[in-house]
Image (cartoon, rainbow, N blue to C red; front, side, top):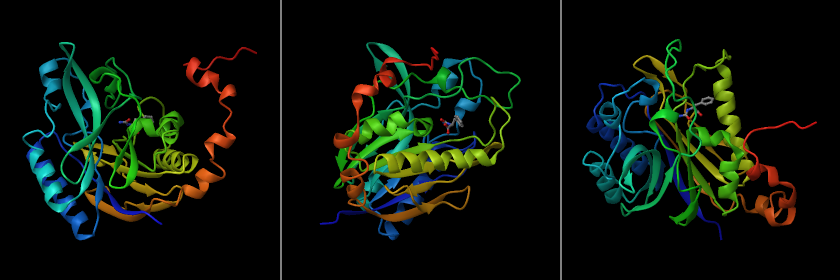
Length: 311
Ligand code: ING
């Protein structure tokens, strides 16, 4: 019996410093309505989908930094999104900056949630692979201060059953690390949802710009195929106050094939009927983990952090 889920990736164009959360939520709701008119039941929104990509800015005042974070979810501004999704019977993935208290101390996470069609938060993920740097790079054209503004996620890579599928989450830079997909693959993930904000320019090393899109798609396709899972990736893209980020939102099949690809750097919805059985033959044959993996030879993957050549 084939299980199908009609899903979409809702790409966001730029969110500028001057754009309010209310204005952004109106855009998210418009994408939800478009999804509903296309018969879509699950939507993936981007990473940090409520504000501009603020880690590009050097800030030292914690109150200024905290203005980009949500203390509650749904927040007053996102309540309208949750209510509309419930009215339309659509589940969704949403990325945002989470400010919470742990043991009486503030903690800042780059977070994503899975919300079911009844508007309930069924899963939460806090970004583990934080790229960039924590010190100010005054010579750089912009900063990438995720290591400064966020704590490392403390809840691992998990999966949840939602809308008849086994769903997992990651965020942006996580998609470049095979470990992220494999930990979910070892839990039987069928759909990996992720959002991203990827600057076109590499501030650390002069690099041809076309490689940004190549490495982005390569990472999605490899992760999907090697774990026989659908990968749904939503960009926030275009030039935010002049800072350009790549588009390339995509729906990638468990075969590694690109099933849908965004064409613009604006708000854009791409949709596909996910056949949740499509990866099954791969899990039974080439990626039958139980049959083929040899964990006795993989020890370095969890015992060694950095590469070390001992010959
Ligand atoms: N952004 C980028 C990403 O991983 C980056 C940062 C780009 C790191 C290119 C390395 C190479 O897509 C986020 N937000 O992680």
